[in-house]
Length: 271
Image (tube, rainbow, N blue to C red; front, side, top):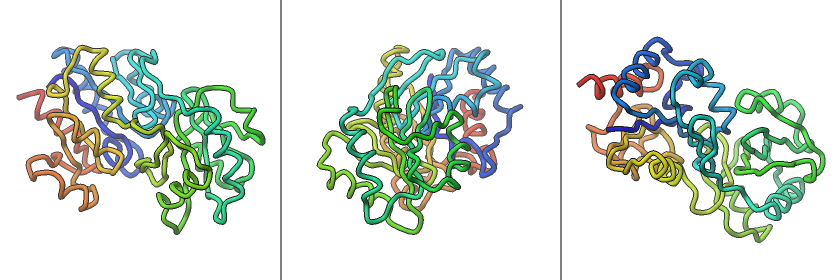
């Protein structure tokens, strides 16, 4: 195995959004010696992922598959981006306030900033900043001035994916799909984009094939990535409908609260 890709929320970090930094550093040192690659693959934005690994980004070659595969970075440089068509973005931006059930939280996410329409409750902005540090509150769509790879939507106490599909159908937009974000929201991204596509683009750039890759995940938005790599590992804390799609020996060594990803990688690279 030459490349180890991991989801973040519910997989790499524990429920307090932290991880064993000493063990992680030791593993990165060993992976560097072995010429192996560590990849963070998340629904978060580039800056959202970078914040998790800020103590390691300058010293180690940590590649990022962000926005559920819509953007890929190597050494801080973007090598692939699948931005949503601005006409689609504007239609969704204008349609959301008119829905019978407005989302409780909405962000339009780019690599540099995320944008929150000001028609949503102001009390939600603080929670958004937990994942998106460079949050800008906007009134008009024209205030969004960078490529957007993802629209993240959250409804409380309702079928979120059904609501996202309703937006797609009522606005008659094509070329996008709704998928789980991995941490409680629904993401609208370009159709055909997934973490698997992000890994494919990254592999082509690094000269690696999928049979040299391992991946860790716990949620629906990880499935394409787990199917794509030769060595998938599912977290013991994943929902049963996810776990039942994989064999018992494909379970990680422990759950996300007990450094399951790091313990599994440690066992592999020190064999």
